[in-house]
Image (cartoon, rainbow, N blue to C red; front, side, top):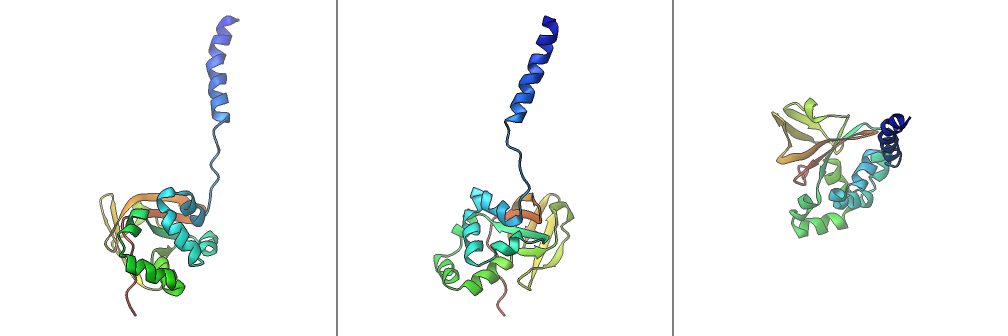
Length: 160
């Protein structure tokens, strides 16, 4: 009898530990960005540009998400201009979004059309993925309606 208790005790302890762990609930691209402290600048700008609801929609979307450090590298004058011009801000942010779900392993060298309307150049060499001159830092953050890849630069759409 004592032997059974000795065997069952660790199993029960493991089950109790697992039961207290939070269960992650799948979330949209917008919520994925909102929950990542390294993407807080992007999250604020997405809200300001009115893109939150779009990025919560069915999608799917692939978002090349600039980190807070990427936004710090943008000249203050440019950030001020974007802050005062919601249309331009929306265009810049939409330039980071491609329709469809593209995991890092599926990236092919060549152009991809953004939801802004212009193409971005995608590149892949081994495990390294680039979009324009930005390097993907953390790939394949899966969301219910797409995928997020963090990047180290803010991309600017071509002038029309």
